[in-house]
Amino acid sequence: IGNIFAGAFSAPAAFGGLAGGTVAITIRSGLARGTYSNEAGMGTSPIAYAAAVTDFPARQALWGMLEVFISTFVMCFTSGLLVTTSGVYQKISADKAASMPAVAFQELYGTFLGGTFMTVIIILFVLSTLLAMVFFGEKQVEYICGTKISKLARYVYMLMILVGAFGSLGFTISILDITLALLVIINMLGVIMLTGDAVKESDRFFEHLKNNEK
Image (spheres, rainbow, N blue to C red):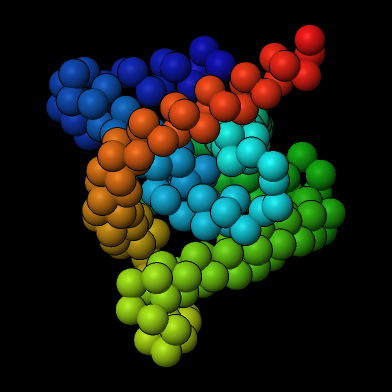
């Protein structure tokens, strides 16, 4: 844990010793990676939550908050501990950071067992993510442009999958930073406008819980 904080707030040579700039870049990168992991503020997860059958929207929103905690703090923190305690972060350059967990598992559990374990995990995570992203994108286009055009969005997403698969990690992350930042900005405007409705639904839900306790 100490190494994580020391690495986050130190000034490597790449930044010319400018600690302030390093901290700013660290915070920006951390916020971006955290947003990618849980999609908080992006407006995509609510598409899935809206399909759930629930008596109170606020109850489903609480599950969404729990999802943010698990995916960001538990999963990302665990991955950070994995690559730190194994020492892999010292052996692999930052531009190949995506391979660090896989290498760490291979060093701890052997090439076959560790590699097989990570391969299965990555396939399941990637497959579920791709299916969800294509569904979310299609529903967004459907809401704006109608059903016929939304079906074309599937092919656009498939094309983007190929771009991400064959493009470099740095290029892919740069594209994500730009496009998802625009998505978050647009969605946050809607969230701010709906703040009053969210407060009313939360009050109604917690009032229901209080009455049931009595």
